[in-house]
Length: 307
Image 1 (tube, rainbow, N blue to C red):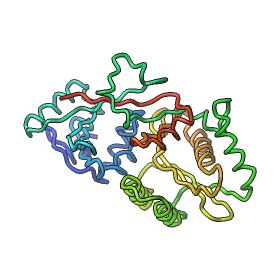
Image 2 (cartoon, rainbow, N blue to C red):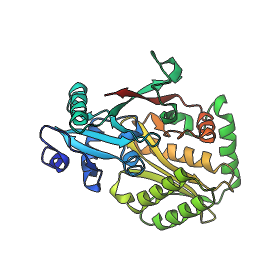
Image 3 (spheres, rainbow, N blue to C red):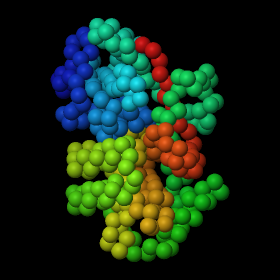
Image 4 (cartoon, rainbow, N blue to C red):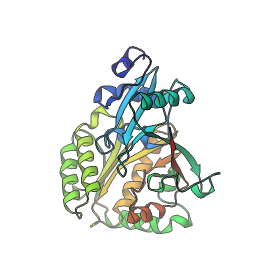
């Protein structure tokens, strides 16, 4: 991998450049060897949000360095380095980069918490960014939604199963990409104007048009031959990241059906997956209520540390 990583490597110092498609094979290898439960270290998490978060990256000594900007403050944020360098050396290099470029940057650290994030030892809401926490669910809890806690979700799922018997499920591939792009345009236009939704929809369309270049796996549901919804994501270690989920709510239970059918497909394709990471709520109260209603088993929580 030494030769390949020379694309964005300086010998002794960090040199950041915009994330380009040429680094996809490098990141695939790195994320396979050093899997993370945070979507910050997934191809979709990086490439679908690279303009919004102004992502730039660097490879040094088989280690991946990522920096972006906070959408709220515009401050430079550096992510925990992933690769062969130990963390202490990686952070030293980040500090040197900030000093040499007269940058006041922050380091974003993430950790997995099973249960309530308030139970983290030393939890400080001034340093943990609540809007950025990612929601983790047991994949088994999404396969037909077993148990008392999931009764409401199971009722919606069962309604969908019993009322839309003409449904078909397809794996996303070249043969249906154009239809999904059209569906995504419709989805965006049918919702109230929202800057973040517009960006996410544009990122979804870009991801669909370049779908084959990424290790995405996803499904769509048709009812009477018409697309009712679709979802896709990617696998890393014991986690599957659900990057996109869009449905037509004319069909009651469409979101529960998408979530459950995808979980079944993922479980069959990647039997090592334990967790579904359904990403953050972007600070939206409605989205937070929705994510909490599926009873997360844990979270990937994030805190800021001054460099």
